[in-house]
Image (cartoon, rainbow, N blue to C red; front, side, top):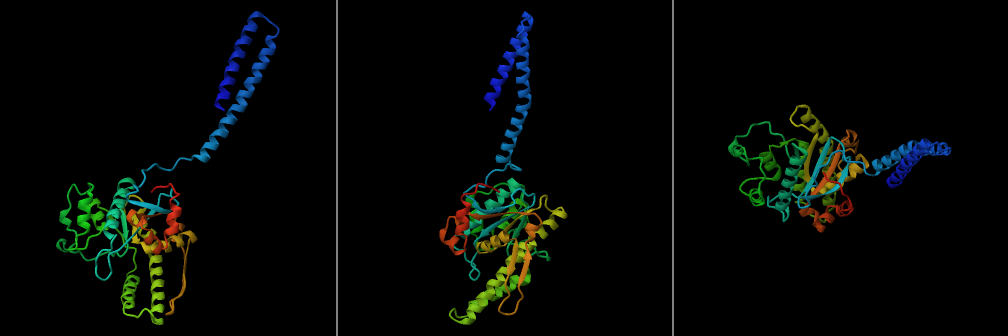
Length: 345
């Protein structure tokens, strides 16, 4: 298209020169040359703007620039498996993780690496997105001030260099310390001065834990076990739903107080919750059936979607590359579909 316009421009110039020469020599055909020039000029001024407008419109539609250009999350840290409303100024990042054993406190085979990668993802979000708020599963605000000597991480250890990146060996050494409980979220709070907010319901959390312990005392072949398992699964769904519904309220409250500069947060939650979370987001609805013991059903629209939040779900690389783990948590198909995506948080 541009080549055609260049040729047209040259033709016009030649015609103008020719007409000028003709006028100087007093030739009769100068009139026809001028008419030709004006005809070409008319086409130039009428067609060219329309063509440029059409070309610009096509490029804008096909190659619309992103709201902001950000670096891509390193693949060695984790993989984005799900994302909606990516351009919103309000964002919730959700990372699925593996937990320490609930009874013995020992680490699962992948927990240490998961925690290490969780720390790196949080660190990356802090540096590239200025993320300041953590919403850890199982976290409860403590109203009683605890002396520094009783904290798993001593506040006296904070220094002017705490914002610097921790090398992998030091990070894993801290996370594998069994003399006190330390996890990635606590290190992010210590090293990068990130804050934590509570999205858990204490009653639901305690009830789930209590029923989980009780389930271990029931024979797996009995009807009582099947019923108890069903009720426990429903409680977990209720707990997950409460966390999701509470998240935007906590984020907005901390933003309004001036504790954070952007309406965004990082929610860390067990990998087994992600399939349910994605189902709620896709439907934009939470729908939980009543329980065997008479608890009512629960139905509600998703607050995150209603309030315009973007949602990005990330899996640490060590879990994303474990086919068995993905199949057990129902994330294998979602992960396979995400491999075609090119978005980054």
